[in-house]
Image 1 (cartoon, rainbow, N blue to C red):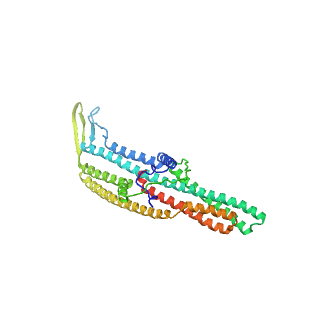
Image 2 (cartoon, rainbow, N blue to C red):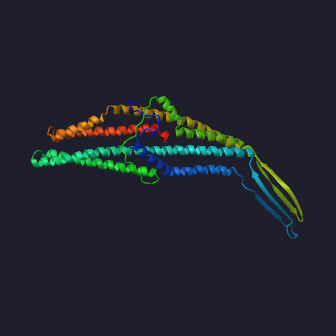
Length: 391
């Protein structure tokens, strides 16, 4: 089992050089071209800018009121007010920190979405490699079927074969061609899905080699490291920090807004100049806002606990599935199956077995080879999921 169990080191650092370059190139392109990632990047920046905009002075206000009096020519009185309102100074520093936390929270959400998209792309790439392996196996089988078809055409002409055997050969050629078409259709669909993740830009995977990994020798240490870097948990923890700071900001909202300015009054020919000072206290409305902020904080803290529990459960489940699949792979001898195919082909050519016996045996072997391809790919996909935080 040890040669198949997978682990802590970086996903692509231990893969084969060709697979590494191809896979990494695909993921780099998708990280650059994916439209959802681009949209989230703009949205995160907009949220930070909204906070920064709220944290600036609103700009001075100008009020002018002219008064007229019956029997008096011109303005009898007038009032001019130029004022500026600003918040209590500590609010500005609190919002500056809020903008920083919002940027950090936005980055964790971006990293989370990026990881999810790249993981989906990675799984698609592994499925494409699996189909590439299947097509290689089917091409091998198809070449053998065509060779046997030619051989039995000659035997039929020589009277050394019967129509039942010839029909079996032709049916096998048809069956293999159907399997090839199905695999090609599956490959085209997977490439289309990969293209969608790549912003609509076509992309291809041609390698037939799945990446290999080192064994997981200590699951507990591995799981602790994986959970400490889990993007879902980090995003939930960032939300707690942001909610906690929102509570502090909301508590300070009772502090007054201050207005200062210049005021000039005229009464006929006389002018009076003065200063304007005012304060406003949002005492009543702020209490409910504080309670709402506290409730959001409690919800965010519970979400961290739930996210951690979910991550732990998924990690353990995937590892257990992987162990079981590796046990299946340990009992799968691909070399022996290929050798048996060659021996059966030689036995058929020398007339030691009939075509019916030959196809009964090789169909069973080809099914086992295909099952090995599927199980191997599934095990690599599970290991990729265990290491998705490295994307």
